[in-house]
Image (tube, rainbow, N blue to C red; front, side):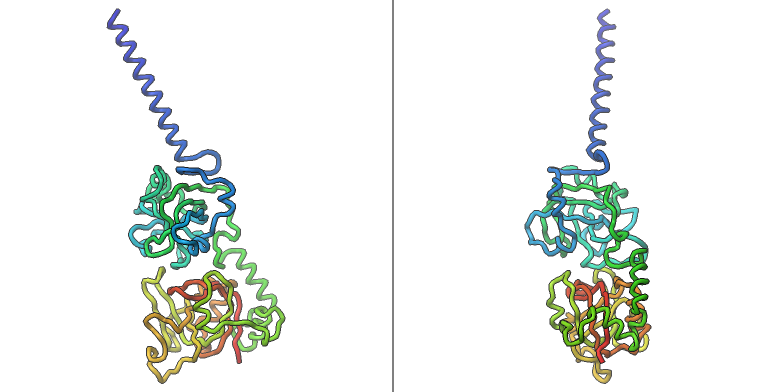
Length: 358
């Protein structure tokens, strides 16, 4: 009888232990998977008010170092040790950091630059966050829209986030423009192209079309009322502001993402096949003088790099790049876009309009 009682006691103990283990596993899965449509991991939750006032990546890059901020954006990749090691697609090999951007990954030929990305350190995050959100173990979160609360710090040589306290995925987020905030080849941009072309913008890259582009840029104002910056002034403009710059198109430029390599050319007609960008200067290029005797080609202090890959409408790239339009070298141009880093700290991107000055 005593042996039977002992057997029953041991059997009941195993059953209870098994139930507790299953409950614990379920609780752990619930914490990792979240409830409803959102998934979160945090030392403290992110309230609705904080999310409403969350900064975009562009805004977070300008935030004060050491301040606690909530940043929103897309998890576009994973990296470790250096921003140049970003992986944009699965399989991911790094679990130490994720990378945010205001635009999603939409295709293999999509380009991201230093000014597009915001590294987020996971190694010093609150308990459970690294395990729950690193892309090596959780590739399903790639391209997810998230809110992240942490400390704005310099990380991997760039503005970034450390000491992360909370991450929340918004599964209900709907991108306003298919995730490409820089004017890529999505349906909405194509519609914009059609509208702009219907308004007479198609000839913008020629002398005949210059006046039509003038109308688009100036909104009907006379040339005398156009407010523009010189190249020197544009290099001091605040990042993220819309500006119009006047300068001479002196060359072409392109580079490996994140500024690892910059390839510039002043030589027509091929311009080393650099279609991605233009080089503006406050003086024209002199073919009889060695380029580095005319311009600072070490730090590019007197040159403005203009990115063409995120023009809106996208057809502007075809009209402006020097490979297809070598006759535009040394033309004086007024060009409108956003002051934003392109290959180097000061640049002009997201071009919306232009006109040549006779």
